[in-house]
Image (tube, rainbow, N blue to C red; front, top):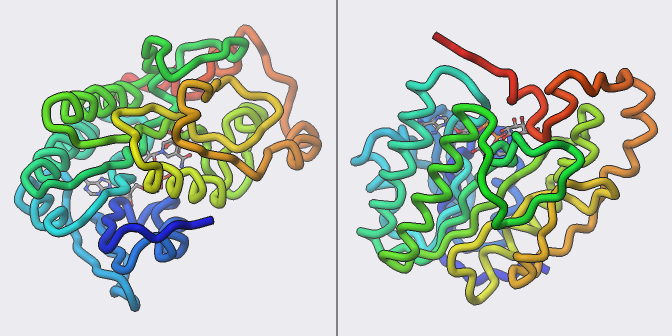
Amino acid sequence: MTLKIHERLLLTGAAGGLGKQLRTRLKANCNILRLSDVAEFGAAEAGEEVMLADLGDARAVDVMVAGVDAIVHLGGISVDGPFAPILNANIVGLYNLYEAARRHSVKRVLFASSNHVMGFYTQGETIHADSPARPDSLYGLSKAFGEDLSRFYFDRYGIETVCIRIGSSFLEPRDRRMLATWLSYDDLHRLVTACLTTPVVGHSIIYGMSDNAVTWYDNSRARHIGYRPQDSSDIFRQAVYARTPEPDLKNPVARYQGGGFVVAGPYE
Ligand code: NAI
Ligand code: 15L
């Protein structure tokens, strides 16, 4: 059940794939949903506020954060690529966001981290919230920075954060790897709701996946968050096997959890 305990929630990355999905669903979680992105995404509807901001712009981020109770932070570069945009959005941008949260006494942030913080574990390994980070890309490295930065802001200033290491959140799993990493949009919303409404989260890390039979992620260290996935990639298994080739296990893309990200780049 969705508990409405927030007056004003901020959703960043509102123009993106997951932002669009959460825009409709998160209205049940608050009275006013403030939406932000660097890209245009249309006018505010009932119960919404729209504020465009580049995460790299500290002043714009300060205005974006003022007056909200909690932040669902999806904004930023979401794939691997050249360092400069990642630096601006995911590193400088995250610092700007937490500085604004500190100034405006925001109590809780949900940070969209990624499985790519851990992408150099092999697909035969089970990893936990406290397994050492093994980023697979500049992008994964920026998310590892975000996890550390949010821990610092919890230890120093008491701002609670849940880092959600999202697997693959799309309408359906696109390949065999995603049968293990898939997170349905409804389960994403269930997970976000749990992270927003659990009374105490401190600084937590949780893997964002549905109830998939094959999984590399063990969420036993995050039971306090109370997330119960209700969907599973298993219904897509037969179709995915039928349309994709047998993996070549000598290829790092098939061997490591991060898939194609482990061979991305260099970009310069
Ligand atoms: P997306 O790329 O569709 O959306 C990201 C949004 O952030 C875009 O609308 C973009 O305009 C915005 N953005 C980029 N740079 C910005 C900047 N400098 N200032 C303000 N906004 C900026 O990505 P998606 O799939 O919606 O993912 C949302 C979040 O979840 C991202 O942080 C991504 O890293 C994370 N994630 C997503 C996964 C997935 O399977 N969809 C898996 C793991 C993590
Ligand atoms: C991510 O972190 C990306 O944002 C998303 O586009 C997918 O590539 C996902 O990971 C994945 O690993 O499938």
